[in-house]
Amino acid sequence: MTFQKQRIFSIKESYFKPYGRIIDYPRRSAAGRRNLFRIVVRQLHTGWRIAYLVVRDKVIDRLEQHPGSLESFEPVKGRALLFVARRRRVADIRCFLLDKPVILKKGLWHGVVALGEEADIKITENASVKCVYWKPGIRMGCI
Image 1 (cartoon, rainbow, N blue to C red):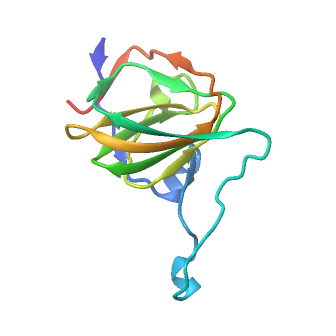
Image 2: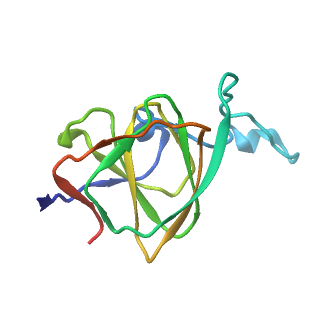
């Protein structure tokens, strides 16, 4: 198995749109000085769960997907890289610095690694999640 260097993209709407959505408040500056509240995603037919992930891996050799659930990754502490792919093709794997909270689309291949000793990430997803794994035959991370 060889290590494949990945180009790291900043999470911007134009780059990340094929993979999911950024959790943010649009036109924040136009909203004045009041508190801001917005429902970003509503799942009426399924229950949700919120999880807290402490990432310590520096390298991963597999990605996972959840065919029936959206999933948010919300950085809390530390720095992490988010690897994503829409299809099971090594050429489709992209790497993002996880510096903003994001929502991944259903069925998106994904994995995370810590840039430092560890990174804390808040995750929100369906209460019951099916996991499917893919080993693309490469190592991804920050060695």
